[in-house]
Image (spheres, rainbow, N blue to C red):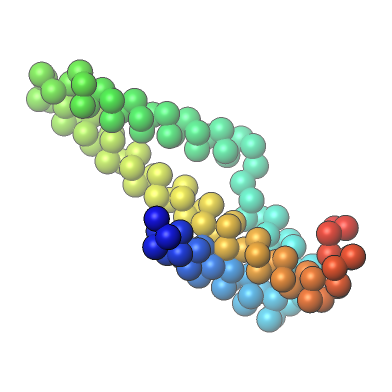
Amino acid sequence: MREVVLKEAIISLVVGGAPIGIIYSFGNSERVVQSLNSINPGDPVVWYFFTLFVIHCLAFVFNRRFLKQSEPLSRASESLHEITHEVGFAIQTIYRAIAGAIPVVTIIMIAEEGWEKSYQR
């Protein structure tokens, strides 16, 4: 379990933290905050991701439980399951970027503006 958490932390920092560091090196803290805001998906996108997750789960359950009797339906359900599985990895990358960017932005804001001003944005 510890290895998985460490691996996810490293991936998140590479995917989300490093780009924020690059943006900061070519800009300022305002650009960093703008970039963090642009990474964050809005509520409709989160609901869309949740819908895709439900479709993925349904495809998995139907393929495992109900569609094994019919070969064409089983293949179609398996294809849908594979597609939704790949989409899930794309969604995970978005959240990895957010998770990696937040600590880097926090450090930048505290270093640049001090503890008292950093949380007032």
